[in-house]
Length: 449
Image (cartoon, rainbow, N blue to C red; front, side, top):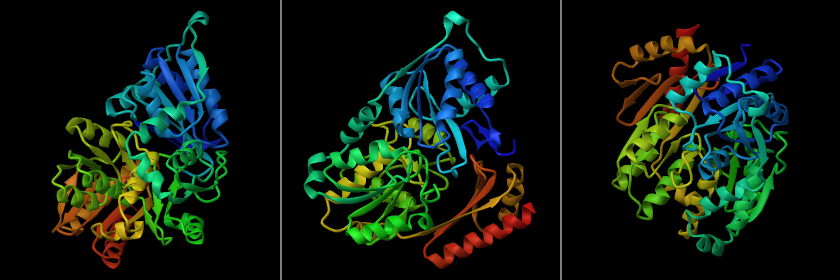
């Protein structure tokens, strides 16, 4: 059972090696017990194992009296949007996000349409330790299939932007959905915005054509296609479409970190004011932009739930994470790749310069990310080693360890979803950032070995 990861964020595991139907049903029944037989929105990404997991989930939810609204294959943000649209007790997305093809998982949603916070997560973990509240034969739940859920999401995204201005530009876009659930809404959104769309991996069957995480080394085909077609932009979604990576008009991978920065730059430039919230692993580009436009900036602990909690606390205008996850409260408190695409296209529509020039005008840093396979309990040793080695830095604890200098920073922390330590460094210039990250990885490796 080593390959099953359970946390307040949900469940992930390898099908046939830790994630089995019995445990999935038990998890769903615990969730149904918490939701007390209320309405639950259910959806799944395109993974081939999703149908098996869906049936196990339905057993647990129906046995605890829940009314299930089944969206079928849909993105994670669509699930969140429909929770609020239907005023449901909660939701459940069947997905393992960017994990490899053999993985699947369960991501529960709170009534606010966002992922579980710490309190709800602890309630779920406690419920898993108790017998489920199974109903009698005459108190079982029901299933309703909803085929147009993505259109509710589409309407919310379209309302954010000047559709006419985007349509006038007739942008040429390459969209890589990699056989994930982004195929349901992504092409439709771009077509509604008047784009000429080329879709890569457009069948949502989970048969990934490249590794699931939208990293530079995995998106060479997208970059090549952008160059071949002379496209204005290339977009890449992860399998459940809550994260977005971007390739500019030259075929340059600008990554996930700048997705949030571009969206923040755009909405602040058009005159909106309000607090901006990111997590402790996100590039300082966004902090610089908030300062430029005179907006209050906040950092939360890493994790979508932590970002959402801080956003709600400060009534944030926008927020998100540096993994390509933009959170727009007007659509929902969930990372949303479709919001990101709409904002980037509207930003381009208001400029005569191409995307590459817009990117080059942003504050320039290099962020380098690495990871080290390690049990969670050993992360403290890694943090202690870095704190001792970098005594001249300002240390921030509570989410692993973040060390800041005037123009650079490094963080080491345990992943919430994988048995690894993540190390992230950012500095002006590739050489400095890579050196800082490499030093930190070596210190961590020595400390945990």
